[in-house]
Length: 130
Image 1 (spheres, rainbow, N blue to C red):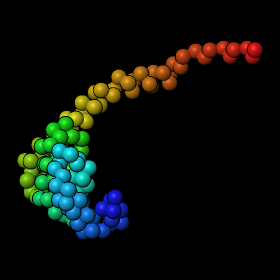
Image 2 (image 1 turned 90 degrees about the vertical axis):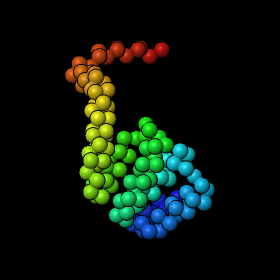
Image 3 (image 1 turned 180 degrees about the vertical axis):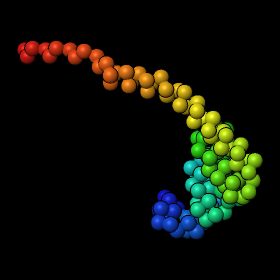
Image 4 (image 1 turned 120 degrees about the horizontal axis):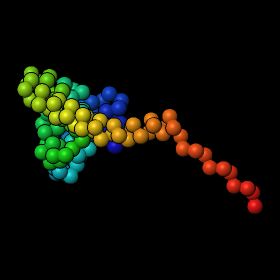
């Protein structure tokens, strides 16, 4: 919690110390602490430690192959800053593919909701009071 507060206040060095301490003290691997690694990765990115950020994002993706796709975007940004353009492109493409898939899943639901707005079901007559 303290690390998150420090991060929000812009104290990235303090936040990083807290995240490092929490993850190392408890020996918590990425397989059991998704949020700790993603938050530490974001903190490292805020400090422009692109290699450290990419390492934390990679740990998440290795431990959680179906991790939220944004991790691919975040790691792609780190790779881009490191000049590792091929790796950045691969991560951005994975992220874009996910977005397209999600859009395809949502499209029928969106169409149904829009149709319902255009053609609302008839209202039922009110029941007489008893």
